[in-house]
Length: 617
Image (cartoon, rainbow, N blue to C red; front, side, top):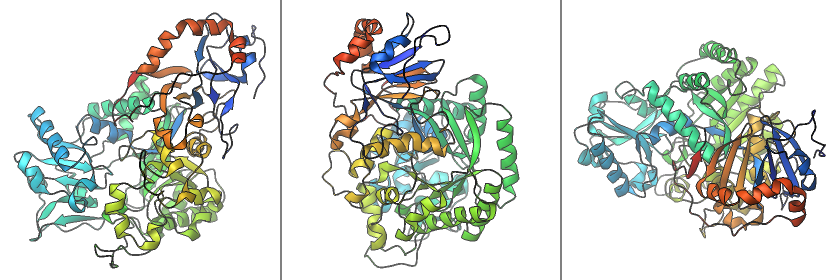
């Protein structure tokens, strides 16, 4: 921690000084720590952190134009970063038929009917967010859609975006019928006579790619900006976009990011992972290198870069396409001959990984099942064996099931465990569509974050939004508790898979900054680092762990500018303007008095897409 120095011509006053709160930065608050750092102040000047000093020394940074932020006991932390998110599809879906708030099948259908009535000129009804656990077998039927929208095609992605739900009109438009075969990388749910029943899993959803309407450039751009607003409101100041490329139903993100750079609307710091087309071969790498270098030539890699490649190794467990070492069970608990899908053959994956690593790319794997995790780790190790050590910081996302022998391989290979903690608890989709169909050994090895931490693996935090909420604080709650808020369930996978609070916060800050190659200027509260910060209240270190879900983002700061303020926090700030002005001249006395804060509010979590506050331009 830096000592304060007098503010003079060489050390001008700060633009902003944060006082009377707690501080989290993973280099100052280590794993297992029960408390955040107290008695410190943070000074910000010209978009960067000028000093982290004792509170009673903060007055030397406070001038007549300095904004003094009285944290009143709240937590100041590095801005959160999301290591695996899909902002483009998430934002566009918020502007289409958005089903994520639906509570059951009836509510889902009512939302679709309402959207269709409100958009009579839409040739297709498109959107997504329906939950598999709302429908028998996780597979909604075309007949349900036909009953409410018989005359127009309807195509809706599932919440996890590994399935699509279509009505008869959509199938007719795409030329899909009983004679349509299942693609190699997907499966069609069928009626007794072989006609598609309405749900299309994985690559089968691509059967609609040519018929469905394309997302316009303007809608894609609007979706990106809407997503950015939502993510910033959740304290997220940077992310890795896990799909930059051509994917059915998800607009190409690159043009929107270019436009945002040109128009100055991209506030967050973004790393893009170019999408590896699994139906193509090594020849696509040349184009990815060219695209990466074109973006680098813009000279804005501080804001947007394309240094990662996303490999989709397998599917998801709830539709039985996650690649597993042991076969899935049927509804009676008997083993089947289905072990899921490896979308890229293991030997080809190793070949591609070696070439991409040699070209200077980071390898970003979707690896959910234990066989997929093993194949991805094999690919990382093969790249290192051929190319030698690099600074690739390769990472495996999702890691739902990891075989015990593969847990220590993460640290040995330098592979980062890219967690989506929000999934690591009992809920309907897990308990009804996943656990009953996995081999018993796999069912007991769900999301082994604790095992990975003890084995020395680096951890990063992500959401996979819009698959699930992007809220890092919601993810932290599950990572620490392994049960959903207000639930009396047993911890998924056992209490030994829980993480401590400091480790969970580190995953969303320094952990993801490391993955994004931004740990030289983000992810920590350090002098010289970008002032990408988040204020959380109440201070999570002061509440019982079962109440962590009540903590909320009060404000978000990027490059030293407040870019989001929660509505009630804005009111508190206005009410406290006089005391804040007094704190500017009496910082030392305020520090001596000790931190105080009002009674913590007990809000319900905000729904996806709900920005409760003000996005500041």
